[in-house]
Image (cartoon, rainbow, N blue to C red; front, top):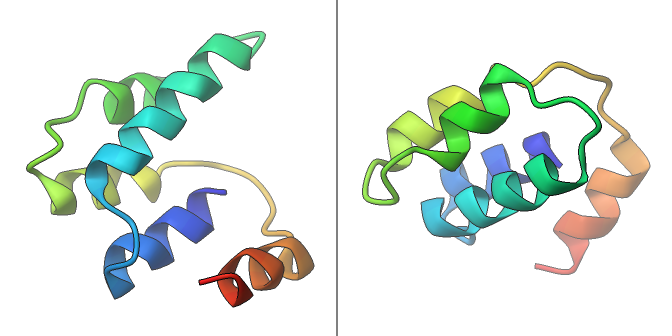
Length: 74
């Protein structure tokens, strides 16, 4: 999902507020809170570049098929 939001912020079809809401949901659902979650959750929604910067700290594998499916819906 982080890669989707990175592309969304870069291409303009997602707002920083959308990413912050997603991070809030991740915090609630996650068994362990990670720094990047808190960094995004507490970011200023007017700071699109700051939110984008925090998204790059998310670790994990990109599921290309799922990412393409989400991007095709836009």
